[in-house]
Length: 296
Image (cartoon, rainbow, N blue to C red; front, side, top):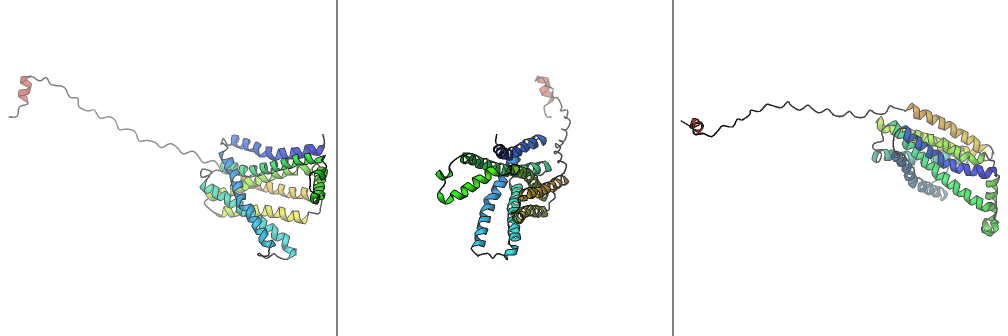
């Protein structure tokens, strides 16, 4: 079998299987159902409903000149900071809202971890399914005369894309699964950080989650722009994300708290001892007995 055919397929399958396997492990390990995992997954989707249109609108405003752009020398840094803050604000404020108004029972470390696994897990699954869809299209186009299926104006670009897909190094073809394995711990760390706003009663934990999220996303955007011309750039960027994953794991376990003890059942007061009531003895209705009860 062609090695790239195998590694491209393996990459897509791992991107979907890893988060599902982690979900099974956590639900059994914590003895929790899948409800909070799915709430975490819904949190990601809800955040993107606002995040994606917001980024599109922001891009249009910069392109049209409505919003001024910085000098060219600072533009990459500017884009990295803006995109990082956009991701951090939309995802972490959405996560806070879900904790407050939906997952009101999620107030323990285990539940925060499970919600974070759902958030990062559904993100990985979506990317994995998109990758598998691309893989199937590339397999179909691999031995096809592109001139028969692609418009002439797009033929050169399509040929370049297909050729690049099937000539990439095999190690590069599985980096998607590696990256998703690194980003899921980061999403769990964000979830546990936001949870502290409820368990510790301080909103500043939400801003810490926003900041950590923004730093990670901004770093990836900036490094991708700086190292784009180098063939080793994808591996180096994944290494940086791997370091961020290790820091996130440290955050997760540093904030670990014992599960709250279940509330003890209320003790009911003992019933009072029964009072011995007098026993009425029936009296025979005779003339003599009735005469004794007569009022003199």
